[in-house]
Length: 124
Image (tube, rainbow, N blue to C red; front, side, top):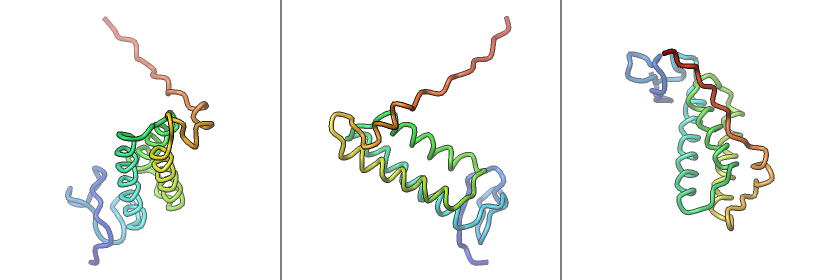
């Protein structure tokens, strides 16, 4: 079998060692697996850019969206992956070129609010 992918992202991996070939046990295509790897690499690049650049609330939102797109293992849409990769790369460029923390997407960042945390009541 030709190895078009190597994916060990989830608990469903073939033989517990990773899926290879044209599709994973979960149904993910080799194309999507490779795009998820590319997105992960783009997120690493954005994180490194944040060390020397000026991340904004929008930057943090893009990181969360990117991570959610890869770790949930429920979205195998190639177009969504391409769009997310483009967003991450654009934000990386904005972070690196920003002055005083002003991202090119700063207008969008005003609408980004932290997600509320629902705490479960503790029983005593």
